Length: 166
Image 1 (cartoon, rainbow, N blue to C red):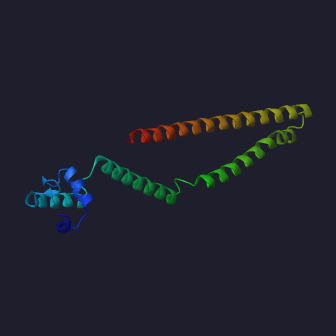
Image 2 (cartoon, rainbow, N blue to C red; image 1 turned 45 degrees about the vertical axis):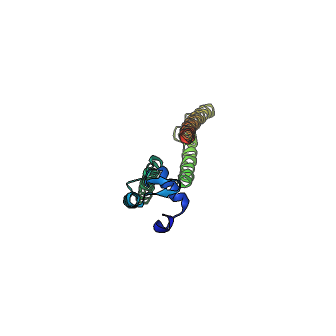
Image 3 (tube, rainbow, N blue to C red; image 1 turned 90 degrees about the horizontal axis):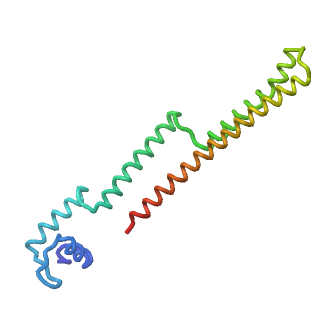
C-alpha cells in the first residue's frame, strides 16, 4: 500500500488508526475498501473540511489574527490608530506645554491684577502646582490600573492556553 499511495508506513499506520484504511491483518490492508476512503480523505483535507478540532481551531485563530492585523493596519493608515511610541512622544510634549502654560497663569494674573500681593501670587502658584500634581498622580494611578488589567488578561489568556495543552 505504501508504494501504491506513495506514502510512508507512518502515514499508513495513522490512517489505519483513524479508520481511513481497512486492515485485513497484521500489516495488511484491504485495497478495494481502503483506496476510495483514502481518496475521500485526501479530498476533504485538500478542501479544508477535515482535520482535528485543534487544526480547525488553529485555522480559526489564524483567520481572526489576520483580520485583526488588517484592521489595525487600516486604522493606522486612516489615522484612527497611532503607534504607542509616537503617542507617548506627542502626549509628553503636549503635557509639558500644558504644564508650562498652567504654571504661567499666576504670573499672568499678577500682571493683569496689580492689586494682588506677592503672597496672593504665591498662593495661586502653589494652588496651580498642587492641582497639576493631583492630575499627574491620578494619571499615574489610572495607568497602573490599565497595566494591571492588561497583565491580568495576559495571564488569564496564557493560563487558558497552557490548560488546553494535553
